Image (cartoon, rainbow, N blue to C red; front, top):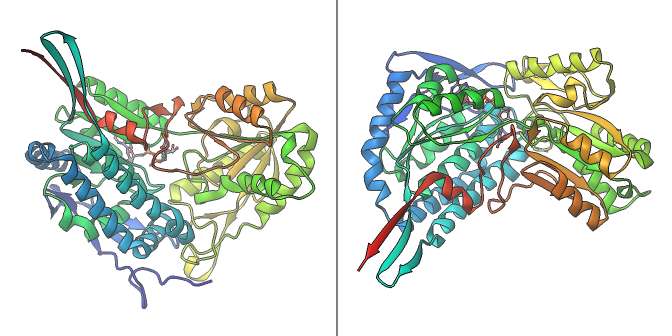
Amino acid sequence: MTRYAAPGSDGAIVDYQSRYDHFIGGEYVKPARGQYFENPSPVNGQPFTEIARGTAEDVERALDAAHAAAPAWGRTSPTERANLLNQIADRTEEHLEKLAVAESWENGKAVRETLAADIPLAVDHLRYFAGAIRAQEGSLSEIDDNTIAYHFQEPLGVVAQIIPWNFPILMAVWKLAPALAAGNAVVLKPAEQTPASVHYWLSLISDLLPPGVVNIVNGFGAEAGKPLASSPRVAKVAFTGETTTGRLIMQYASENIKPVTLELGGKSPNIFFDDVWSQDDAFRDKALEGFTMFALNQGEVCTCPSRALIQRGHYSEFLEAAVARTERIKTGHPLDTDTMIGAQASNDQLEKILSYLDIGQREGAKVLAGGQRIEYDGDMAGGYYVQPTIFEGDNRMRIFQEEIFGPVVSVTSFNDYDDAIKIANDTLYGLGAGVWTRDINTAYRAGRAIQAGRVWVNNFHAYPAHAAFGGYKQSGIGRENHKMMLDHYQQTKNLLVSY
Ligand code: NAD
């Protein structure tokens, strides 16, 4: 095990700036009202940088810059845009370790995850959309013997993007890569909890960006996010965050008849059929590993498998093994390379999780593992840590129905296939789901019957760039990843030509 030095301390590979302004028109710009807010690290609760507090005036300046840049950027060739994305990918990969440490420090997540997943996935995503835009083709139809219809994809123009704090750099890339590939200029607002990671990444790539094509306005949802999402000057709003905020975003955008894509919350079921169980084999082990995925990224994942459904035949044996495995998850300092669960991203998030630990017990759910806040001493004192927690209860309880967004799983049993599907679909969300079985027929049927945009069969939490990702029901509108994402950032032009 090694521990990376905290940013700014002796031996650190990352130096955060003491202050981050907005990034507008290719330059750092001070906030119009001159206000900043403090940004603490979840590792110890101590502020480490200040962030410009954006308002409607800053959003307008960013929109001016984006509108100035959009026409020329929209006329660049797919090859030029692909080249830019590939250059950003190369630069990101070159600085992978620094970015991993920077994000871990600001978000609290374990550095082994940022090294192995967050940043490599961002690199892959950029390269995928570089390839996808070059491979995109229009179409031609012959209408009659002297008329031809051509279909072209054109950029939307200037788009607004608003992202959450759980994967600060990856969420920025998920938004920026397809939008830029499609030829749009962007105004992006990072989450107020994790803007510095996005700016740290930006500082490594900003010299590559044509001025005004990417603009970053920091700040809070009501002060900077709302004017951005409500603006008649944006052609589209792309949002990732809570379902309740998603409703507001739709309302704002509807005023100007703007399209929205929404990536919202989830309460993903993870279903373990009886045939998973055996005394001991690699498949059973993989399934138990799949169970513990509820704690990955401190449970702060929209697809967190926060409801485990275990079939009655081997319920007790499976659950006992799952509890034992959960108790072996190593919690600790986010910058230790062997830590599996670090800190929750903010004090508000910590308080929310603790309130659900209380709600679960008051509802009569049984705590099988964890259930407490972890309070460390020394350089982690004051940080936001929680034990991975397993509740056993009933699917109608609030801990089964509401998004906790922490390392908490609620377990229940089911009788047969129909029962499993009924419980799995008994939620207002429909983002992700897991199915574990050795039987291909059960796997396929369940995969089709579950109302979710992504069903992992015999795996969980893989996010390849070329697999479409998004929500059914109240988990969202539209998809991310996959080349179909380009459609969300383009409009179809038809030329009907007679000759
Ligand atoms: P949030 O909705 O509180 O905030 C998300 C973003 O919206 C932030 O940038 C915030 O400042 C902004 N915002 C808040 N209120 C706003 C308003 N009135 N107008 C405009 N912008 C506003 O969500 P969060 O707590 O940052 O993120 C966690 C949520 O994100 C969870 O529900 C999680 O499931 C979801 N999420 C979904 C996906 C997905 O792909 N479906 C991915 C990651 C996170």
